[in-house]
Length: 234
Image (cartoon, one colour):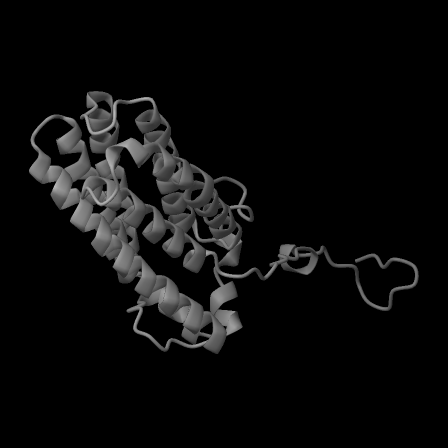
């Protein structure tokens, strides 16, 4: 076995572990922002569905959703992906784009009248939101419940837009109020948890989500080599 000049021992091929470094950049959790934005958007749209705001002023609220809610959800979704949480990132971006699409189309529609095209969009969106809820239930059941309520609200609104009666719009409005309250609690609990570095208000984390708070750094980094952006293919 040959030796290289200046070395005291035999040359050995470098292993992958010896030449690979995975750099992780800590960022703040975007979930409180996503929860609060979702709760605000849901409550604002509920005020229209429940008749708390005159139909003539619906354009103002829809513009506020576009200016305030949609950008915050998109920012939350992007940073969720940067934090290596594909489920939260997908959910926040999908919902943010849905708010944007329905707000823009509602601005071009007669106030207070069902729009069949929106019914098709909202009803088609429901199974995808439910799929996200199903994926989240194993680790973040609180987030799964929030997504399930959002899917129910989309379904009720879609059925109303299909012309099946005003009672569905009222039910969708009250569901939206419930989403707002639920999102307020979830966002507050996540903020307190982030500040204390431990769970204070119940979030019912399980599995990997619980390990991310209670486990040590070694446990959290063990599977980093299998994550997207590190492994060769998605």
